[in-house]
Length: 108
Image 1: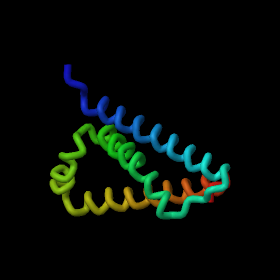
Image 2: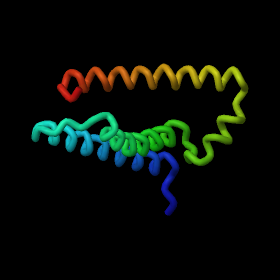
Image 3: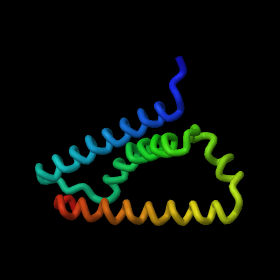
């Protein structure tokens, strides 16, 4: 039986975010051992986060990630503008929230 798009997306989302938590814990563990990774070394945390975000998009939109470009191009200009601004605002909020949490935990 074929899994639905949302179930596959949920699997990707959970896998990506669990991998991100594991990688973050590994970086925290390295810091307790005296190694302080630089910004370039932290790029590796982006891959599990990207997988999780792809899964989140598939859950929210109920369509495979590979078909989202076609769907996006089918929107009217004002719809793309409005959704694009919403994505930017959410991304900035997540970025600032992540920086605040990292600061509270003493990671940065």
